[in-house]
Amino acid sequence: MSSEITTRIIQDNEFLQKVPKNTVEILQKLVIYLDQQLNRDWDIYVYPFMNGDRPDLVLFNPHVGIQFIEIIEGKYQDYSFEEKPYSGQKRYVSSSLKQLG
Image 1 (cartoon, rainbow, N blue to C red):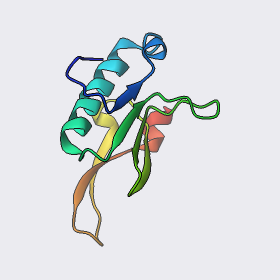
Image 2: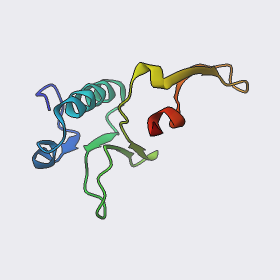
Image 3: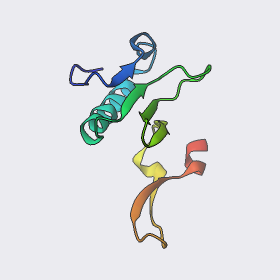
Image 4: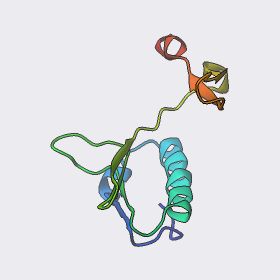
């Protein structure tokens, strides 16, 4: 990871050496973005060891809660654009069927 990352980011550097380089690059961009956007109450854990599991990212705020983030790599063509009728918001959604193929 980069020296741009602040001290509220907890990461396992030894484990990161085992992760594919392109995944680490994507993860680094996301962590830097989250570090810049989240207020200081949030801690960012990168590949924490949790009871035998290692989620990609865990965000923790003692006043709000916890969020797990899994990075899934794929091609742009594997995503579709949809609008949710109840919210009126548009977003990209991964096609699970294309990921299986």
